[in-house]
Amino acid sequence: MATSVGQQDAQTRPRSLIRTRPLAPLIGVEILDVDLRDELSRDLFEAIRDAWRANCIILFRNQTLDEAAQVNFARRFGELGSVLHKHNGRSSLPGVMYVSNIRENGELIGALPDGEMYFHSDQCYIEHPSDGTMLYSMEVPSVGGNTIFANMFAAYDALPDAMKQKLESLRALNVYDYENAATIRGSEPNEGVPSFAHPIVRTHSTTGRKALYVNRLMTHHVLGMDADESDKLLTYLFDHQEQPRFIYEHVWKPGELLMWDNRSSLHARSDFSAAERRLMRRTVVVREH
Image (cartoon, rainbow, N blue to C red; front, side, top):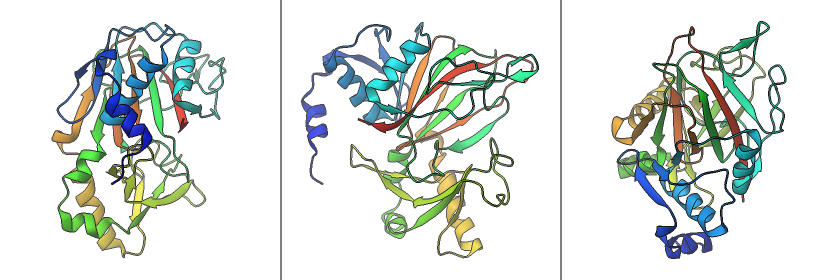
């Protein structure tokens, strides 16, 4: 495969611009000694973006970020997504959404308040899913509410060659049923809910690497297969991609910013007590520059 200009830049850029620490053997790095409130030089930012593309997720600890600082950093990556529901008007800037179980005056101040969430990729149910998602922790429960990530580059690479060939031309329908499947998989989606069919093997738009692009929460069936054959194939792929060797589980502390690549990773959430507060701030990069 030909090397793109962006890949050539990444290969020649000095790695000493950032210090990193691996989060797990096959996914994720922590980027050390960077304050995201600072004006990052172009070379420093590009080194951060290289690390994101190569490792699926990047983590920054000990940050103190208001909405403007988080938005400014996110905009360096690309165009930000809009937020349809402001949840009691808490966000003052476009593109900022809160994920929280906290209520004020009886109303939730954020989305996706409670419970476990199966592995998924953000917005896989629309024609042009977002490239990246960024989450900043403000309040976290004492136990649970962890975010679990899986590397879909590595999951694809580990498939038998015969399976790779079988998947090459297949597409699967991804569905988001807001009533039945916001956090757990529904049996049959309601009529008219958002859905879109994507290739089961997705080629990353900047690196050119191949990744599995199905998930347990939102992938409903494989096009052109009967239900039994589709279910059997998807179950095999779900079990394969969720193996511990591909996974990193992040136990949140306040003041952490974590960004993941929706083109190359899945994420899930562990359960936590509804009696404890959880407050996170989210921004979404729709299109990477």
